[in-house]
Length: 475
Image (tube, rainbow, N blue to C red; front, side, top):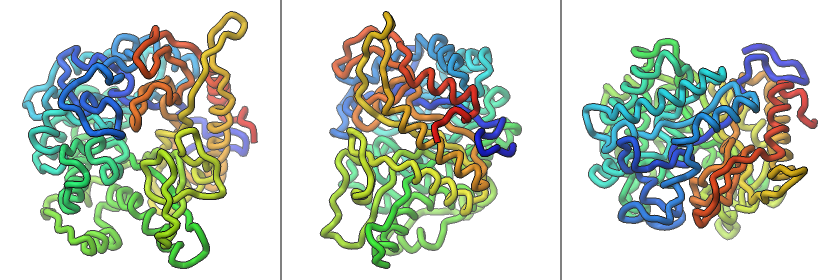
């Protein structure tokens, strides 16, 4: 890592933005694409799945990146992006997920996306699986509960590395892999409702994904030897609600539900506290000696993570009032403010996470999601439509200042790709009105709108941050 000065980030810092195919592409039934779980989740994780695609599912069109990718990537380049994180829709490459031959039309689409990135000098950062399990795998196999998915995923990953490995340097195997514990259908393509899943089925799905991640890393070593493969976990520091030792240990226990995934990806084996948790829950996993060897040999090159919130924890069940709108465990922290959706805002928590992860794993870290979901108002200023999103600027500024502090602490941070760099359909609620982007997309929760793009105030702010390499941040 290049050394940072007190006022700038490393010269090779990867500034950019992050998206997911199901939330931006649209064209859900074009180009030979099969259905994914997202096509039957019209309201995100807030309601049960539908039997098939429905007209109220905004993801069918999303923001039409499938047809407008060149325009959007040019806007990213205008901001100065060094990298662009996007995912490949598994069902564009293997429409059912269990075929033996890929869909060429789907592969060609991502060739064109990568072409545009290269045209503008933007390094692709590709997520192989980002909440987009083919629907056939959910309906026929019950998703990652079934060990057959390991082989299907490995075949899919090998096709990607063979096709794009010489052009894509940075890869992530699974988005927020630990989220399968909280949202089994969204994260693991598991069709069985969460309240009907056994603990053994749920944790077997976790194990199957971890093995598949190791096999993808193995495939990259063989087919794309210059590439770097990272894991991606949901980071969420947990603070004790009080100094009571029982609260302190409750916070540690909550944090370990996330840390275990990094421990396994980096160290290549299950930590003792995780194994005890499985024993205490009566979980017995099917793990072969070959799988143990795979996990140990094919560890990741870097650790990437999303960071939006921190939580508080307590051993006192009478105080367990979960924060509004959160899909996260833990309890509300009385010292923090929250977003419109109840996500508590904690910039210092990002510095805490960066230091914790670096101390724990000594692997380069990549912040691949961070941002503020908010309701934006499109207005006209000097004859141009825009959004005055000072609240988003303040949120990102304060978090980036803490990234700078972590760099000064000696943490190796590769880059920063804030979530939803262009407005997209929310994963949790499937709304358009929960906006994250620097670019406003004219589409409403009822599906109306022109899909025209407009630069928000934050667009120019982020461009200046990148151009100055962080020197323009307000400290």
